[in-house]
Image (cartoon, rainbow, N blue to C red; front, top):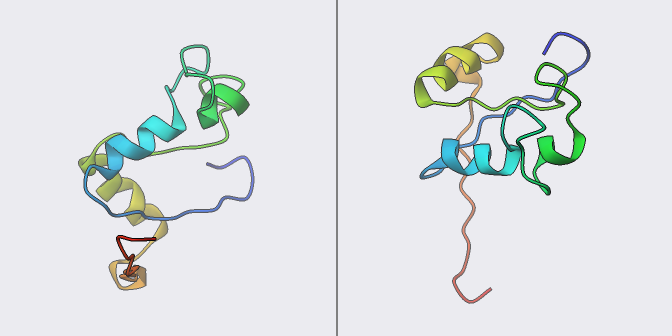
Length: 83
């Protein structure tokens, strides 16, 4: 996260850590499934384009590096079931 510009965001949802880690893929790009971000774009374990916290505890520590508590904004999307 120090080799260039970054885009940082915080997501909140039920099972969000598990969900995001599934989209991101295994830390080792050779073990990451095709179609995951790391499976498609990572070069090595340390040069892998994306980072995602692996637990709620690590999220709390890592998010505090980038955000103060009052900088996080609650946003709710009202989704209709029939869409």
